[in-house]
Amino acid sequence: MPNDRGNYQSDDDYICGGYDDADLAAHIAVTYHRGIAVYGKAIREVFQPIDELFYIKSILYDVQNAATDIIETPMYISLNLCRVLFFLREGAVSLAAFTTVFQKLLSEMPFFSIMHLCEPLGCVPSPFPSPDIPLTQ
Image 1 (cartoon, helix red, strand yellow):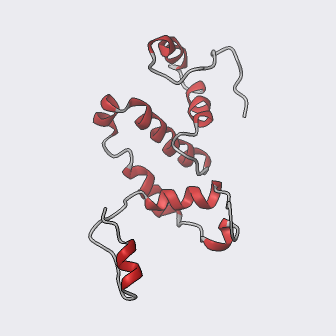
Image 2 (cartoon, one colour; image 1 turned 60 degrees about the vertical axis):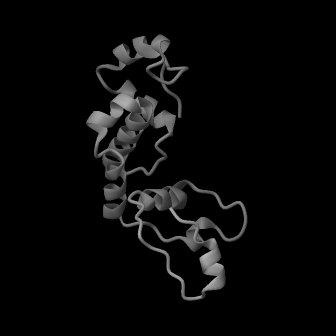
């Protein structure tokens, strides 16, 4: 991505282009639903909500090659798949790295016990809760 700052400062009519950010809608939706303004106006005064269809398209973009990408980046892909599932099931906008979502969803799945056994091998986030310990929010 080019650095357009200088162009904007020197040319009032400059419009950047030539590249896309397919998951931009997801970034904006997370900002709108989860973000906190550090300075200035509240986020919901500055941003408008993202249309649900754009958000879905955006989060699906991150997992479009999940079947092959999971080999190289298993945690990233797993968390993104959980984010998609969490939105489709619960309608909740979340960060891909929102591990409580990951743990909540896995605890409801039949292979949770197997995933728990993988913890010592570094396959899942640690500390990973025991299937006998209820998850807290």
